[in-house]
Amino acid sequence: MAANVLSALNDIDAALRAISRPWNGLFSWAEDRTGISRLKLFFGVVCATCMFLIPGSLYSALVSDLLGFAYPAYATVALMMRTVEKLPAADHRSSVSPDNRWFTYWVLFAVALTVQQMCGGFLRYVPLIFLIKTAFFMWCAAPMEANGAAYVYAVVVRRYFNADKR
Image (tube, rainbow, N blue to C red; front, side, top):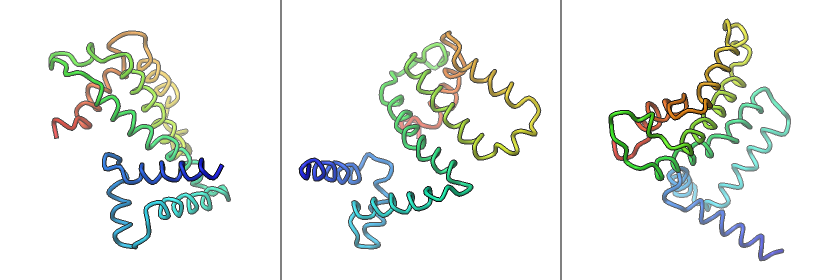
């Protein structure tokens, strides 16, 4: 059991030190400033997050949702950008792979749930908000090549997350 714990700690430390990870810069900065190892800083953040979530404050659901989708959304977009082939500029929507359309759908769904959680009280007063939300997700999940998820992928994801165009 001790070997498994040590192996897990080594894996966490390696992930914290991976240059390709989005948190590398933050942990590098904190480690340089404090002199505390990244692994200890990580467990400090985990403990602080747990202490925040345990009492169930007003923002606990929002923080929980953000933690549940922020990195998976980033990793999904990064996966899409690594696996997508160079497509002709004429019509991006018809060339988006089914995997990328579904990845985009789930990222959009997670973002919508988090925004709804954050602004739920206000959104109730927006006329037809649930009809609009349902229609949007039906369009995103439509079983056709040029559905809403393909459109969002072509217009937003490719434009703003493509490292080649930055």
